[in-house]
Length: 229
Length: 404
Image 1: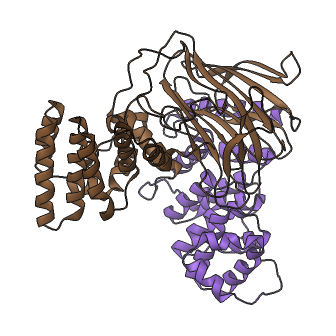
Image 2: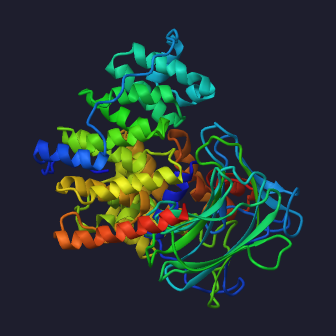
Image 3: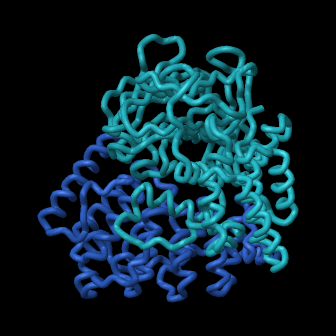
């Protein structure tokens, strides 16, 4: 997913906030605090594997490694947390605990941690909160790199969605095609294209009437696949 | 050898060597046909099929279930082993007209993940020229086909029952008719007409077919495949096999260092970056960039003379030039460049008809480097020409696998 770091179009923050509220259909409250769990002792050997990373050895431990990784995440600084997030990304195993911890870092300014947490969250969970948080970052983060990487996560890393959730996912992203921000529209069509291989003729820079026709095509498609469900 | 390397090699081969003209032998209209019987020629290769067993998953002949003869192919996945087994079939690229695909498939657990995909030069991606037809399972046991970018329910298969899939694909329109028959029933369970392909995009070429286990690596999927056939309407005839698994020798179809070295020159970015040709060139550049021997040749002044002599058929002179260049590189202690020139010398020797000399030259390179797949496959050619059946097979199967 190419960076949009050089693109303008971030827009007025108030407009973005209103847009986000409309598209998210929710308040702009931050992520919930992590679920309180009994703390496991940190596994020093696991830390070494995570820092490698030695994915084969980690994978060989089976799903029992997930709470151990969570313990490592809680105990670590930002760099270690980024390493653990990368392991969760690579495993692609669902973990409620991992999701909570990753969402808590969706506001960090540490670049590597932020990007990896955004990418990994959809690979450990199909909780709708993940998508909401990513769309929020796509719309509102003041850093264009983080907005772009949130879009990348939406494009490529929502791997546990069932068909109904995927329909909701498409509904949300298609709604972004009507955003006032050119950047948002551009990111949204890239997400749709990565997931479907299609643009249905949508050009984010085209005049409003042309864009509206393409959005209508997307909505008809959405309606048709909704009937499949 | 990874499936990525094999795919990159095939893309590169299509770029640097033209597709064979239709000629000779083979049954008219049939591009690919296997019943997977023990007395069939099951040589893997770029014009037949590849078997990927990169971890603990397996692809093998089985006599447990079959629709004809004595055997079928069993694809047996192992959960959490870091990869998935795959049978990947290749046929001459079709860019127009109708293509007909038929195969039989049996599920031991219909809810276990699997994928069958007909694809083109963009491989198994959701983009034009990528996946054209995609059949897969859902966790609720439903068989689905992905049409217009969304899975469409078909039916819930029964375990241990054969299903025959019959596809007629209009390459130009990017649409297909799909029928699926259940064993023992005359009427199709599925009879769909004129459905858009996976990305609702017309005009994408197709040249490969894949059967895989669980790409998500969470399930020990086991399924059986039999009687796979791909055909076209017209009476197309194919070049005969010149060696096991291939209708052209690897040395004539793989990117030579000569092709890779220019690929290292940067190309200007433009609006055509997303075209299939641009993507294929980018993949060739990736292959070249990952090969230290190709990189070592970039900017070498002797390349132009070698290339000219090679194109003029002056292979003995090209060989001698390359050997001298290798010796110069030895003196300069430039090991990658020396290895690269030795490979070019070996290629020229092979084209000159001297397989024995080519073998010696290729072997000179081997200890010094981690041999790229390209080199192993050309050695396979050499051993074929020298009559060493076992060595030919062993080298070819390092890349394309083996169906036991």
